Length: 77
Image 1: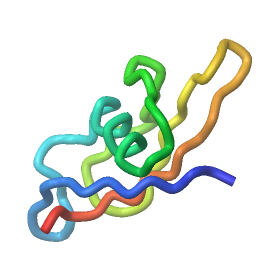
Image 2 (image 1 turned 135 degrees about the horizontal axis):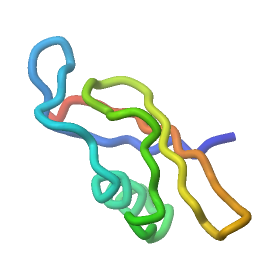
Image 3 (image 1 turned 45 degrees about the horizontal axis):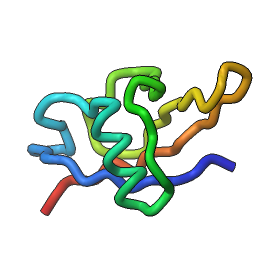
Image 4 (image 1 turned 90 degrees about the vertical axis):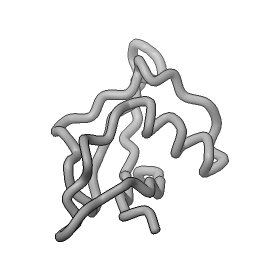
C-alpha cells in the first residue's frame, strides 16, 4: 500500500492551485510527515498537480526499487 502524505498548498476557488506541486514540495511533505528524507531529484510526479485532491508521485529509491506515494493535496488555511 502506498504511503499517504498530506500536502497543504495555496489554492483558489474550486481547489485550483496557484502554480503546481513540485518534487521539492513532496520531499518537504514527506519529511514533515516523519517518513524520512527524500532526494527531490528522485521524485517523479506523473501528471502535473494543479488541483486539490489525491495524486500520486513515484520515488526511485534504488535503481531496481521504486515506491508510490499518495499525496493528499489540501488547501492551506
